[in-house]
Length: 449
View (tube, rainbow, N blue to C red):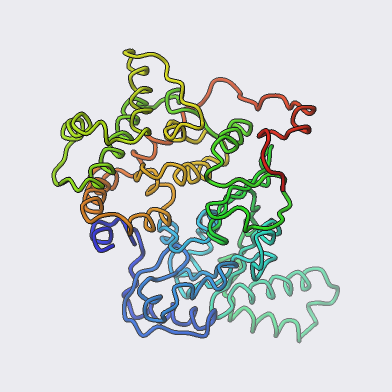
């Protein structure tokens, strides 16, 4: 993993905590949340305040995420909103933290100027005993305060001010006035610096979790389903009819289609579809060449075309399917029939412009293991896990490629691959066919749960 760290592909964009003041604030917050402290004089933190160095020191990389639910966080600066979330257990936690910091940036800036803000992403589940518990997580509430309780005192002072304004003879209530004065010393002047956090509750709709072998939850989709990265039969009874595994290619493809979650790269607006197909083919060539023990040092795209020609018989069906599609796209071939059973099928898709686009691209990364770039961008936990199993030759090539082709312009690369131009037409899902769907289900003859 050292290659990735050196190139900023792992633990990149973290906030460096080096000043004694910030280290002291972090320790007070850490003591408040966990009863632990760090002896390190400098370290790096992610959007939630988790530090890989402190995780090593404490021998506990879940020290802010006990049981993998109700993640705790420490904010030292609002700049943490630009950082990734490491050791993610849920696909929604980073988005919730980023939205929370952005919505309350001025208030949090004022609070972190004097102290750390410590808190928790609370839901109704404290321990996940079975996959069915995941369906109980419907809302996430952000609960937080500074280590010296500024927000709590601000709320108490606001309530006392309301009493003072509304109650008769409050001007003569010496006890109330004395309490207001004492509380104001702790909360600060609310007339000049009002501290009221907004947007602290978030809906948990469709999401991914790493629990139980990895599960993609789509309970709020028009046609709900659960897709398991591990053993679907081990999940037990769930409150949805359809549970698919990664090998259930036809049902997953139908699920995408019925919910309007995907579009083909060829039909996507505003992208260079031919270039994207060529790049995916190059990634497949690299995988095959690495497995064959070939030297990948200094390979350019011309070299990869040469490799593909020389070792065409060794290339998997994913390559040949994309090659046929590229030939059609460039006008030199016939339309290829690539059904969902074809190994290349999911490589031809990307997420459509829906609120579930990031989750869909994350699932597609799981379904397209040879596209290391999509996996790195859309599902980093999975990328790091796959990376550890590769040969040293492939590790080196992938790290060099991502540094050269992705790191220099992350936003531009993401826009080129996954961005959507405004559509002139309002797309709607096809009308429901109740008789057929109720009779055999939207995915045909698949197992009902």
